[in-house]
Length: 476
Image 1 (tube, helix red, strand yellow):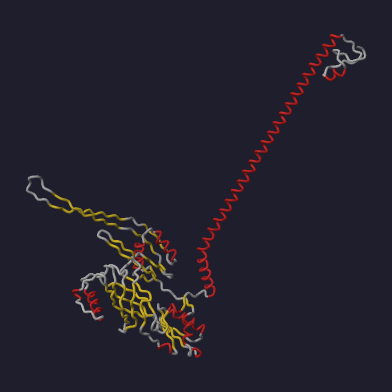
Image 2 (cartoon, helix red, strand yellow):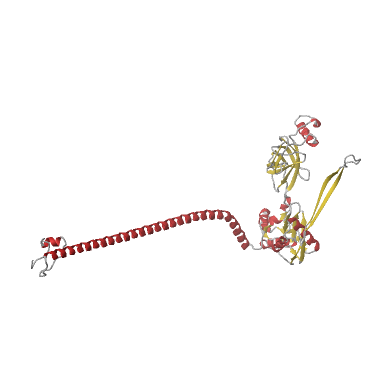
């Protein structure tokens, strides 16, 4: 059909609608060829459409896959952000905890260290104000003999729980009989058998300027064979001075600060139960007058006589009251009351006793061999010496052996001693101690030898005997 669309008899619109291939006008084709061409082209078109749809599906799948990967990446990033937030939150919580703990620790440290720092600052402030002064005059000496006086008395304690003196303690039974006789009861001390009383010595210190009615503490000590004074009560006891006069009366319940519990097979003891104390247990009945305060001259007696300390005390007083004092000797400083202070000597003494003076300390080493205590003073000096110390240990063991004769022999069975002696001697090492060392260097040198405190006492005694220790060595 010239001039029209060649097909399978369908109209142009149907051919275009079904996707069939079209043949341009003017191309001569037979009917069979036209059908073949159109069918082939139609198949090829459908195949291309299917391929295009496949590619589009593949592209859509790739896009979905990319979208999935993006979602997965977004989820991973979200997880990482959450981890980071959790870690930051944990770090913040840990930081808060650490801060809280640090604050608590700092508070505890400050609470413990603050008193020490405060004391050091106060001490340094005092040192800046008075850099050379260390003690007040009232701690260095007695003014005009103003001091405490000792009192003593014998008393009887009752109310003990079977821990008192035994029945054969004669002075305790006699004391009980005498006390009962003053109350109108007469008993035979030898027929008295009690174990709830104890004889004690009562001591006290009478302070200066104490007035009648003032209370003082007393110490009670057993003088018999009592096991404990716990729970006892001291009966009325007179306390006398060195002149034999009664200055105080003591009475009251005793506090021992320990206890004793015993049975047939065991005993438990805490502290020292045979010595006790009664707080405010004595009442003063006689005063000691101090007429010497009414004089124009005051005497200061140093507790530790020393010429340097006496000179410093006199110079310190003269700094406040010019020309009023001088050192009479190494233990006495004489002070003249100024004219405007004679009417009020108490005010003058109050000013004087609170003046600061640095005492001159004697080079001294004090050792207590019973407890192994060594105290070394400030000005201790040692000349150059070489020290070697070695321990000698001797062990003696005694044993008993039995020597028995053979059967049917005429010998006798005897016991023979077997003594084993073992001697060990350590090899000492030499240590050189240079002359003029300080206390720190002396202690370091003694510690370097590796010896015990008791051995150090022996070393110090030996150094003193050699003449290299320039200090007093006092053994208590």
